[in-house]
Amino acid sequence: MKRQKWVTLTLAIVVILLAVPLLMSACSSEEATPTSTPNPTGTTQATKTPAPTVAKAPYKFGASIALTGAGAPLGTAEKKGIETAVDYINKVWGGINGHQVQAIIYDDKTSPDQAIANVNKLIFEDKVIGVQGGSNGGSTLAIAPILNTNKIVQMTCTGVVSPAVESTYAYEFQTAPTQYLNADATLAYITKAWGAKKIAVLHASDSYGATAIPTLTAVLQKYGVQIVSDQTYDFTDTDMTAQWIKIRSANPDAAILWGSGAPPAIAIKNARTLQLTFPIMGTLGMASQGFLDSAGIASQGITIPAFIVGDNPLPRQKDFVDAYHAKFNAYPTFYDSMGWDGVMLMANALKRMGGPDVVDTDQFRAAFQAEVQATKDLPLASAAYTMSPTDHTGIKLSDYVYIQVNNGKFERLTFTP
Image 1 (cartoon, rainbow, N blue to C red):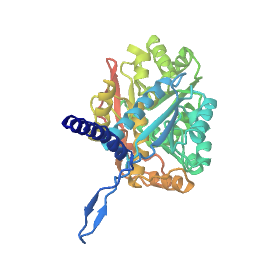
Image 2: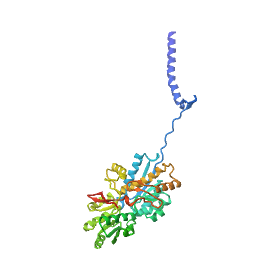
Image 3: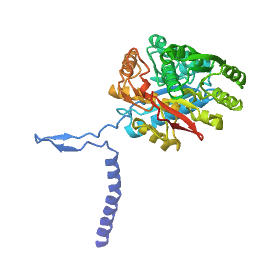
Image 4: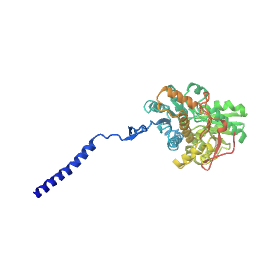
C-alpha cells in the first residue's frame, strides 16, 4: 500500500515538472503587454517604448571639376578643399540640424561637353542642391545656363564671370575674384613694387585668358601703364618660346603671364631658358601645388596676387588650414581654399535657414539662392565674403595677399594693395 502511494506521488511530481516548461513557453508566446505606472490621479497609465529615431536625409552637394586634362592641377586641389569642408561640417559641426553633408564629385576632363553631361547627372539623378564648377572658363560658362534654368546654386571656381553674366544667371556665385579685380591687384603690385610703366602680356586663348587684355585695359589709366606686347597661346601648346621672343623685343619693364592649368608651367620654363631679365607676374591660375610641381625650379621668384599661404595662415584661415593639414599632411593653396569656400558658403546659408528638411522644391531653391546672396562678412579661407543682388563674388581688393615662389613653396609678401 505504501509502495503504491509512493509511485502515485512520484508520477504526480513528474507530471508537474513536465508541465512547467510548457506553461512558461505558452506565456512567452503571448504578446507583451505594456507596463503600467501610476499617474498623479491615482490611475495607471501605460508607458510606450519610444519609436526609433529616423536619420534625416543628407544634404548633397555636387562638383564638376577637372581631375584630368589640362585643368587637372586646379580641379584636384578643389576636390581636396571640398572633401576637407565636408569632413569638417560632419565632424566638427555635427552636420546641419541632423543632416549630414555629402559631396558627389565628377571629372569634367577639362571638357565643356563632359561638364554638361556631369551637371545633368548631378541635377536629375543625384538630386544635388548645389554644384561647384567648372575648373576652367569654358566648362564654367557651359554649365551656368543649365544650373540657372533648374534653380541650382552654382559655386564657380574661376573668375570668368562678369557683372553681365551675373545679371543673366542669378544662381551663379563665385569663390574666385572677378578678372577686373585680378587686373586691379596685378597692376597695383607691378607699378608700386616694381615701378613698371611698360608691360607685356602672355595669355591663353580660352575664355579665362581672353579676359586679360579687356580687364587690364579697364584699369590701365588708374596706374598709368601701357601694354607694349600682347601675345597668346592655345591651351594645347607645348612651347611658348616664340611668344616670349616677341615680348622681349618690345623691351617691357615687366610681364604678366595670365593663364591656368598646365600651360603656364611650360611658359615659365621657356622664359627661364631664354634668360629673360624682366620680372614676371603670374595670376591666380598658377597659385596651386600643381603649378609648383610642374614648373619646378623655373618657378623661383614668380609673384602672384593670391589669397592664402598655407603654412602662414591669417586668423580667418586657421580652421581650414588645420583641417586640411590633418587630412592630407600638407598645406593648402588657393585652389584648395576655393573648394572649401564653396561648400562653406552653401553650408552656412543652410545653417542660417535652420537646416530645412525639404530641399527638393522650387520654393526651397529660391530661398536657398536668396540666403547665399544675403551672405555678409563671412570669414572663410579666401576672403571675408559679402554678397548682394549685384555682387555674387563678395571679394574685395583688401582680401588679397601677395605670394612669391621661394625654393619650391609659396611665401607671403608684406605688400598690401
